[in-house]
Length: 282
Figure (cartoon, rainbow, N blue to C red):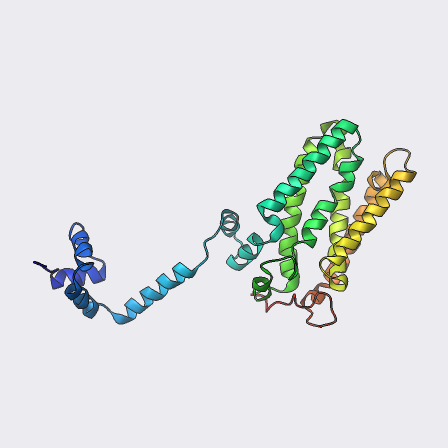
């Protein structure tokens, strides 16, 4: 090595004041010269150096945000909430593609049969199924992260429910646009979907995050079968009276859900929702 970086240049290098092309030369030289690196270490502030290494370690260890998570953060949602929403199992591509496939197949069958009953009966079940598959240690691979998140169980439930319900309603709405011949009748799934989802959530503290919605789905299917046997025209759940009943059921279920919100943080071993407890909300 025939030359070394001058001490003044090294001091400027430490302060970040060394300008190109001397900066480039110093960078290249320091990679090959142990003496200059030793002198640079002596000139550097050890506290600032340690702080810099800590920042670098934190940056390297920090998980990279996906597109959906980054969009949520830009919309003002906190980092931990955005991470939990982005990790929701049924918001993944595989689930959404499966829902699109089911809806597309159903719409094609409706158009061929000229009967919207199949679509109206199936559409309310999709948001309910999405909510049921969003929680619990069995179905949620991010369950452990959710448990230690600074959120109460009820708040996390609502965050994921709104996200899943929004995605489901948007996809159902797009499918509805493919049935323009039926006019407003094609929207008769909306109130039943809200009623089924709210009822499934209201039953969750007692029956668990899977059994509660599953029971609601079975009851809905049974009602559809009975209505189909007895109907001489539009099945009862999709008439004006049926829509009013669905709205009332949704309102009662939401009221019960609010009344039971503290049960979502229960730690009782006898509670089906036990284990879904979270730390204090931030």
